Amino acid sequence: MSVTQHAKEIHEQFSDQLDVSVEEIEERLDTLVNEYRIPADEARRSVVSNYLDETDMDRDDLGGGGNETVEVATIAEDEQWVDLRVTVADLWEPRSESISQVGLLGDESGTIKFVAFETSELPELTEGESYALGNVVTDEYNGNYSVKLNRTTSITELDEEIEVGNDDVSVEGALVDMQSGSGLIKRCPEEDCTRVLQNGRCSEHGEVEGEFDLRIKGVLDDGEEVHEVIFDKEATERLTGTGLEEAKQMAMDALDTTVVADEMAAEIVGRYYRVTGPTFGRYVLANEMEQLGGADAEATLIRARSM
Amino acid sequence: MSSIPTREVARRAFAHEYNDASYTFKESDDERAPVYALLPTGERANRVFIVGTLTETEDIGEDSEYWRGRIVDPTGTFFTYAGQYQPEAASALRDIEPPAYVAVVGKPRTFETDDGDVNVSVRPESINVVDAETRDRWVVETADRTLDRIERFDAEGNEYGSMADEQYDLPLAEYKQAAVEALQSLEAEDGESDEPAKVET
Image 1: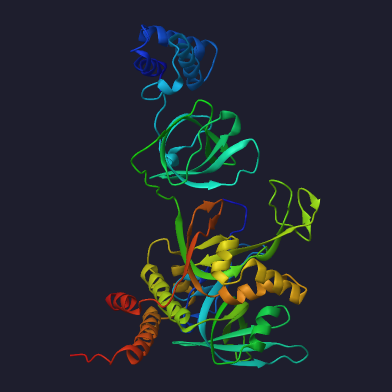
Image 2: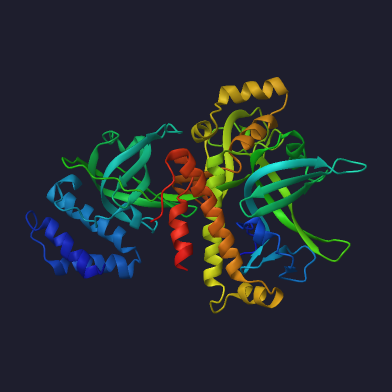
């Protein structure tokens, strides 16, 4: 967006309360952007704050919001100020006391992680409700994008329900391998560290008393392509019918944790599955799964005869 | 290109075709480069996935255990051998009571017999008992993959199609016919269990 466009939008926002021309606004922006080398969005913020002070308005009073309303899947740049129309798809337990809420926001394009901080003193979002969120800022970590709510974020509950689309992928094939690090595993108990222990050691925190967890890293192969899939504790339990407590008991009886992976492999390797979920790096995280049964021989027979 | 070696796809082929895949090759001179068997329908295979009926197991080892398994699909028999270097597969062959449906993930291996024939076998990575539905799905999938290969055999740029053309003098129609018969064998089973056989008019 050009400085002139920003100026026009700001002018619209304040036209009722303030007698200021587009040119004046543009000049202020221009000074910040071209003289002080401030990013356009920051410059705009600064100019808007200035006018808010002059008019004694709150940022919430601004009509139309200053940002572009975007779909979450299109967010691909760090530190952008945007508006969203979203449904709270999921709320997670905050891991830090400075965080008031953390979870997933979704619209038709998909979902994105969000974080709200205690210091922002925002009203709490309710899972399943739809909101217009004004002035949230994008953030990037390891190529994954999230949005941060902040003190200036406006939260308006919507009457309509925003549908949450998903960016999930579905992969299917024979489960041809279960990789090491599957079955009954131990994770590092240090705060914010969930690394899987190798021989009782965390690569970050050294020797620690691990916490048991279940996980399967598998390979689905359809004869043309391979896909790596991860089943977390719940997914592993649904896939194999073995829960964490049962797995611990099995390991205790055998004095060996590897029996769990062996038994699980015997249950699942060589069978066909369809797995659906979001991708994480080269893995598909299994949210949904089904075992695939016999296929339609007739269709392939017709194909063969027509060749 | 990424320097991380990617996992080899497990190809699908019926026993009839697999046992003809006697030509093996490497893509580079590197000692550790993967060895591929050339499927007669024009695809390289470093790994295969097969599902069939384990009909016989036998320990043919002399000093140490060396297990041979016969795995039958609608078109023929796969031979698989597992010894001390494939302990899990070997113990599977020791423990499984034939007949049983099994799924095998493994690598193609060839050996020359005394009278100069080349036999193709499977060195198993895993052997697991599965159900009839998994077997049926494999038959349909393997038929589809076989037809895919036959369809693109003559396509321009199909390196392994032309390689198969050079290395083998084998009629593709035979592999298509084997796929058709495999599918028909499933239909026949369905007919018996679900409904009276349809009369063709």
